[in-house]
Amino acid sequence: MVEWITTPGLTDYRAAEDFMETRAAEIAAGTAQECIWLVEHPPLYTAGTSAKPADLTDPDRFDVYETKRGGQYTYHGPGQRVVYVMLDVGARGRDVRAFVQQLEEWVIATLERFNVTGAIREGRVGVWVTRDDKPLTATGSPAEDKIAAIGIRLRKWISFHGISINVEPDLSHFSGIIPCGITEHGVTSLVDLGLPVTMDDVDVALKQTFGLTFHTA
Figure 1 (cartoon, rainbow, N blue to C red):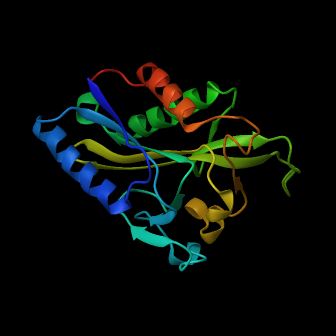
Figure 2: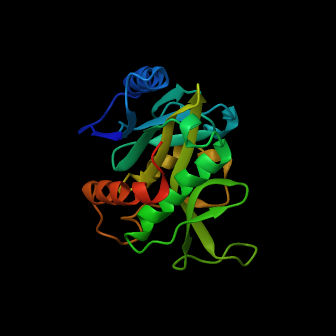
Figure 3: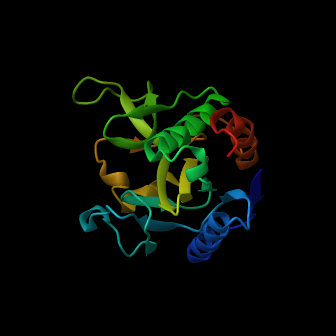
């Protein structure tokens, strides 16, 4: 069984890291259940293991946290559902690439509940949506915006960190970084797409689609 925890209000980032570190160790030791933890953070930037200093364009805007998850710079803040995923990847096939694909599929299935078509793009981390309401790109392709980010770490085959889905964050806050090092595409949210979706709605969809994507360990 996977334990689901939803924490109201805004969760301190370092406190979240401490919780994940402890819980991952307990799962590895067999003393705790796998866990999905749903939180929101105050406005902040995080730097993954591949973060480039030049991509932090406004370093004094919000607190910046170095973290050991994969990926580059990302933003967390109110209105964004952060989903910390503490699962036993060792018991789920020991295939990291397949696990990341499952996370992507989970996000896409969740977005489908709101009639939003998410997609994966080669060379671009995260989940993207096509913007028919925006001008074509310089290459004549439809504009695409990022709606969800993914970044995980494994220790003893237990995952932590996870995914974030933009429900209704202040999208101007993303301007202090180059999200995931990508400059030619924008960022969007469910509300920015014109959908009256609440955080509770997203949480329900996440729980409904989880079992469709992940088998029991």
